[in-house]
Length: 254
Ligand SMILES: O=C[C@H](O)COP(=O)(O)O
Image (cartoon, rainbow, N blue to C red; front, side):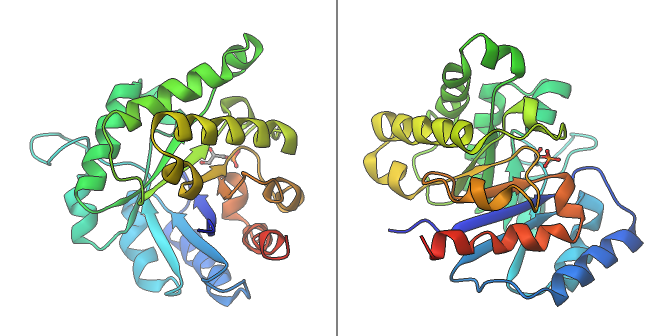
C-alpha cells in the first residue's frame, strides 16, 4: 500500500489571532495537490484551535501540539485527549524535542501519551530525533530506536501513527539534514519497525522529516525513498508552506 505524502505545519508558540487568520486565508486560497496525493495538517497553539478548525478549508486538518498523558482532572494547565476529541480535533503532535528537552518528557512518558491519545481516537504525529552530541557520538540510531521502542511497547495498532524524524540539531537552526542523512535514518527506522513491530507496519507507517525544511530544500528531501513528508516549523508560518505541500508531487511522478 502506498504511503500518502504527509505535510504537517507546527506553528509552535507563535501568532496572534490576526496573524492566524492571515495564515488560514493564505492556505485557503492556495492551489495544492488533491487529498489523494497529500495529507495536510496544521498545528496552531491550543487557544487558536477552534478558530483554525472553523475557518480552515475542509481538505486540510488540524492538530494540537500536545495533550495530557491520561484522563483529565486536577492537572492545572493541561489539555486532555478527550477535550481534543470533543472539539473534533483529529490529530495531536506528541514527543516533540522541545517538550522532551525543555519539559523533560521521557521516552516512557511520551510512549504513555501516544498510547492514551490513540486509545481516545486521536491520530498521532510522534516525534523522535537525536541531539548533535548524540549524532557526533555515533548513537543516532540507538537514540531513535529507544524513543520508538517506548512507543512500540505500548501501541499495537500503528494505523493512526505518523513518525516524525526530527534531528534536534536541524530544528530552527537552518542546518537541514542532507537528503542522504535523512534517508539513512528513515531507512534504518523502517528496518527497525520491520524487525521489532512487523513488516506490514514498516511498509505502511509514514516517516516524515522535520528540521529546517523550506521551499528550497523540500523537493530533494521529499524525493528520498523513505521520506514520506515533513513536519515543518518556521516555514509553516510563511507562504512558502504552500511550496512544501506541493513537494508531494515528487512522489506522484516518481
Ligand atoms: O516541528 C517542527 C520542527 O521542530 C522543525 O522546525 P523548523 O522547521 O523550524 O526547523
